Each structure stands twice: as C-alpha cells, then as structure tokens.
Image 1 (cartoon, rainbow, N blue to C red):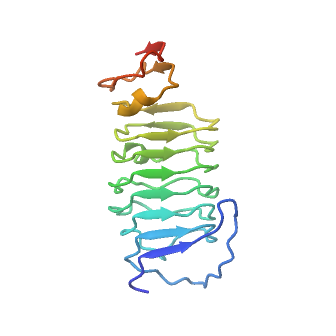
Image 2: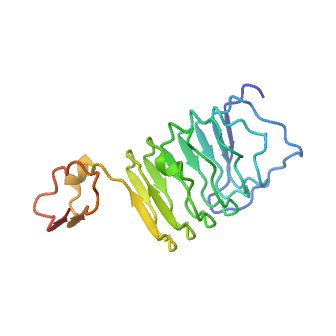
Image 3: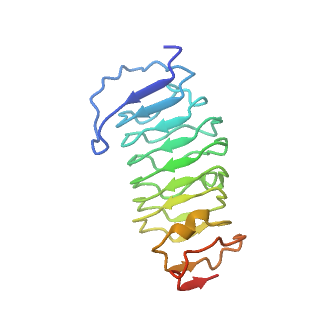
Length: 204
C-alpha cells in the first residue's frame, strides 16, 4: 500500500487488548503515512515497520510498546503525540527534531520517571498532559507556547518549573477567579485585565 496516508486500529479507551492478527514479520507500511492510531498495539517495538518522518499524528494508547525508536528521528511534521496508558514504555526518545509538535498526552503513563530534556524545550508545545504519571520526579523546562498543562496525581513529582511569560488574555472572563499567585515567574512580562471585583489576592 504505497499510497497509504491514514491507518487506524480502534478499540475503546478502557480496553487493553485488540484482537487483530499481525503476521510476523510485519512488512513496513507506506513511507507517506501521516496519521497512525493503533489502540492496544500488541508488539514491544515499532522496529522498521513504520516510517515516522511524514507523521502528523502518532497515537498508540494502551499499547505494549517498550521502546519507540533509537536515537533522534526526523519528525518535521509531527503535531500530536498520544501515548495514554503505555505502561511498558519506560522513557521517551529525543524529540528535538519535532519542531511543530503542539500536543503531548502521557496520561496514566505509570512507568515514566523522567522526561527527555528535549520535550520540555519544544517551543511550539501548547498542551502537555502528565496526569497519572505517578513515578515522574522532575518536570523543568522553558515552554513559551504552553497553554494547557495537567499533572494531577503525580505523587512523585519533586521538581517542577515551567517558564511562564504571559497569562491568557481571556482571564478577565474567569468569573470564579479569587486569587492569583505568580511569584517567582521572572519571565512574566505583563498581567492582562483581571475579572472586576472578584480577585481579592494578587501575589507577584
């Protein structure tokens, strides 16, 4: 299938197994593949089966994969990385060549203890989801474009620092906002208009 662009094997998010027969060895897919979603992928590696250079979205939730790839891959088109519940994947590779990456979703990635430094230096990253990464100990970086960050139930997180340079312009519409603490945010350049009469405490 040399013209294949879109490949998706779907299973409900809470199912850990997908009954898809996979011939061994598995022949490589199209080098033009742009969207890959394989729920509950049963093998422990991608090997040479997939060419990732053209990928725009890479989704492998609840998979058995233990390693994505070796070294640094050219990922000039990658925008979305979704690895929800990949509990056999201990660490992530270098993503410094992913210059368009906007979303990284690592929910319930229970064995992740360290983020590769390149991930926390991606200047295009807008969304980072680390909820349920119970072994993650450190998240320190400089993410200028970050808009959404979730880190609930990260019980081992000891060091956390994301350089904050601006607050969202729509903060005025947050009618339930009562307190704002941006102390230590040395890169913060300005504070937009806040909800009138609601905010009773501001700490800079």
